Length: 391
Ligand code: NI
Image 1 (cartoon, rainbow, N blue to C red):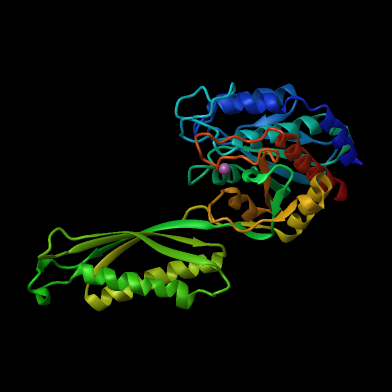
Image 2: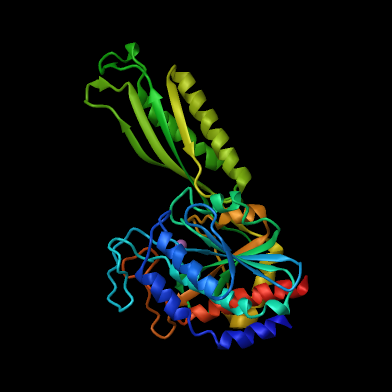
């Protein structure tokens, strides 16, 4: 069985920390991962793995078995954050204002580990393992869309990804099917009325009163239009209008954010936002411009693939290692892969359970417990092996 062979090879995997620390010392931010990609290419070539370079800084490794069969993908994000590292460790970032403060160096090292394992097992399976090293997860519009447009998902039947998660202890993993991370959008509304003297409102179209009315009307979207069982948030973050106490403002500007999990809910909120803004402005005789920018869509895990990886995770971490993942309001461009092929994205605990200490993601002293790396490789590699075996 392929999975047994994976376990044997896992024991000989000694490079994980070296790879991770190398990546950690030379971080590169979104869309600038040139040296990172070069380094990863060298490592994959040393394993005799065929590669391609979609986009500017993307990288894909192809491990082909002895004959045709199913194609299963593992995705790692390779970008760092524009942040000055404050942790004093020998492997600290050598690049000013760049730091792997989200654990993507760990994700990448784990994917290299998966590569190493299967590079030595090519005669033992049919099909293909595709390793997607994706740039620019941290910076919308993100790197995933370009990778998909370049064809990295062609023939792929299932995809798995993980995020190291420092608020959870090593040895635990958060898994859930359905939506696990939110769609995170932003909007701007510009209101145009007619200015004038504060004492003569009858000669004006008052955008301050209009803005107040509109803000209230928009609250009806979530409370009266959205299905109460489908989470949604609409928040106005800024309101700007006016220049003096006795002048009626001729313009106002509102900005806000919308968070949703279901696509239908997102579309409903967008349509209602437009309709209510238009109708409210109409009733005042005012004009408006509405700019709506969609961020990453929600990460929606496939039910079957999530059950599948949960069973694998139980064998890796034991039944007590599995925790239900509550939805996270943050975004992730793994979402785009899941719109194309069934798969699952899981949250692997990454702090040392002995000390219980950790820093949150994106913190200047962020770090992972490196003992999680072999667990990440085992989880991903056994999932891949079991998937190929069952097909
Ligand atoms: Ni991240």
